[in-house]
Length: 363
Image (cartoon, rainbow, N blue to C red; front, side, top):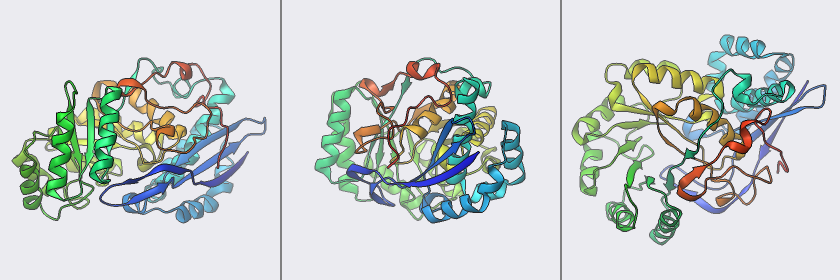
């Protein structure tokens, strides 16, 4: 067994912006697990300083510090045992561990000639997946062009990132609702924009629109402030940067109906931890969104399908699957991407071993 790691930098077709960062290429690491029989499993992680405190360099350091121990894994039980003994290390390096875990799961699935779902004794992929349109904080002309494109494709579920400029943000909502979209549903992503609940409530009221939900309106971890916004505005709060590990569910148990958790596979530290969080959230009555890091390739898009498929009854929305709509190229010649209506048909993958991806390039 040999593990290798590589930084992945694929240019975007256009820069993607929100209140915290603007990026023009991917910031990812890809781990390859090469088995003695020639099988190669792959995994991806997206380190984000402003989400989990990680960087490409910390991911490389974590990998190099543990690689030799990981290369001794022979079965799923070995991987799970290491996870149990090293929970805090994974908490601090979730993106890197995500890439490592996925590489093993992909490789073992291929070796057993089983899909990831079959290998993990999960439900097989069936039925279409439906994705949200995500609109960033680019200039208004760019926003309007993208909104029209999503409308033409038949999207009805929208996530709009706001920048704190009330006239611009109000115009975005007004423009979006003026398009011929049936049953439109809009949620906002503020990316920790406001300092206080009072400030946020005032701003949200000025938008004059009944939002479906609001993501990360306040500073990271300000649950009490989010509760205040929920009481004032009457819509649930989506936790993203403020929810990184399963222990944080304890903070939500007194009012589960007030919250939605954005589960991003890389942020949570891999597929197994994401599945664990999703199971516990459903048991508590907390609904989920399966999110995505900007710039994910088809590796993480595929991994997210497993978690979404297992939690359809509790899934409010799904993000990602942008593929070469955003990237100059993907790592596979047949990237996983949404089509008309934001749908993705998983049927070609359902019987393929491992993640079912045929890689064409890793740079």
